Image (cartoon, rainbow, N blue to C red; front, side, top):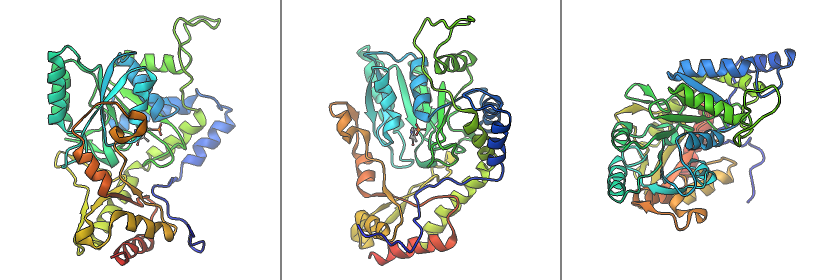
Length: 379
Ligand SMILES: *Cc1c(COP(=O)(O)O)cnc(C)c1O
């Protein structure tokens, strides 16, 4: 495809550094804490806990590694099953396979695009009868918006199934005033390059259970027994976050609020600029929470709008602008062929018609205007 080389590429969700990140990184160099331990790691964990309102946190190499440890800590083992949202990125489910378990996927509801609590409750109740309860539920908060946590937590608590929140895309989003990621037994976040704040790569595991977070740190540093020689009684991992990257994270935490407001502003800009055109339906904001609008998402009805989703994607790409379809549901992924899914029609429809627009917190009004005018010209 011929790219328009005269204009700088507009990315879907690029990094956006604040004022303090470089200073913290320099400090790591000056003090020679170039290691997966150090004062920035400790401070990043403390500051993160304060920001989201949880008791304990462990800074890790990625969100994926955080979920791997969370599943292990929740007791998910070889041959077990875990229920998981189907409309999400692969990393919400691949750690289920790392521990030797099998994912069973759950469809979304229309009002939040997240896991349908009624389908989940049905599935857990049915499984209780056959003595086949899942060992965990992985609940994803998609595109910056919380799922409807209360009914999900109720059924998990009733059947003593641990709830793990995948808040990789929803740092700073709230559910009834609480931060997503802090409500289930365990939660995790991602600081990958495209997330709302980034450390280039990284993750955070959180819980109010001190034993679990201590065990996560132990497993993440090769599971060393307390002995002066290197002694190991279980197999661990090398999953800790670098002190250099934790420095970036500390700087990014200080601008999270502004980043959320900028992304919400993008969403409002798109919605207002495109309001007069029929056939575009923006991702709803459920009444129970506040979305960060990490990505601005919408569905396209081609008959009403006059162009389909893929035509819009191609027109934007031709102008060197990155946009994406909504996640391909995991039950449709070749690698999960043969896995069970409850429902699936809502996620499939969102995937067929859904579009994610450039949503960086550093987008200019000029760029937003260019994007909307290209979309309109597709008709
Ligand atoms: C990004 C992401 C992850 C994985 O996080 P990494 O830090 O990239 O490993 C997990 N779940 C969802 C929903 C994500 O978007």
